Length: 274
Image (tube, rainbow, N blue to C red; front, side, top):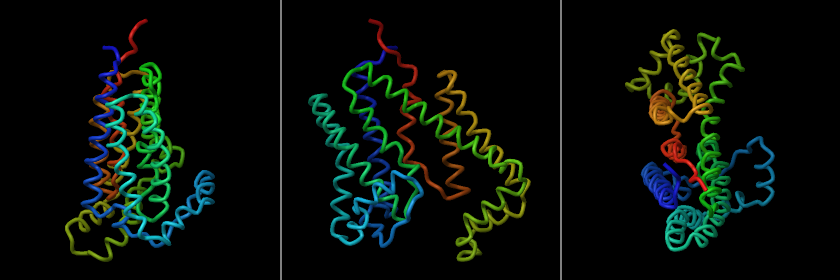
């Protein structure tokens, strides 16, 4: 099946739907900027962040709490504005996508500088506006698949990292990770069922290592996508399994990566022959 403007509209609609579903989830968990009420920031070790910090926007936000809601409103309004303008006229949608790209980078850079979440989980919001800036079906197709390959790399490289760091050859690696990740939880809630579950895993390194190895193999499965699109729907299932396991075992939420699943769902669409 060939990629058409109708498919482009469906992809935009799916993106906006996922964005606002996750926005509701974030608001429910008190993770909007105005709800988090940041008082300090963390310095990340990358050049782009240092350049961004030279603008002083993150510090200005700390000094002006009244602007937190304004930043939230602007950030969460952009996908809806883009959708409306794109439905009316693609050229207007492109301008909205450029604005969304700039706003997303500023908001997410600030939001993740404060001790709330890592910037890696927000890569979909950082990159998808680039896709929506594409007017022609051909350019949209190539950027769309570029995002697909980025997502595959995002997961597969995590598995390679475990191997290159020799972590996979340490039978007690997962036990140590669990104790480090949940140290505060283990101390503050010793009688809770989840605490007992984590402590049991930590005391049984052979079982926790098997979980660690399963996670590694699951991540490496994403290399398949570099060679064929046949199993992309299966990779969606594996991603969801990994996501749920990560929430259960590590209390790490990567729901914000979910828009990349769109690239796997529609990966078999082809360019129309001229």
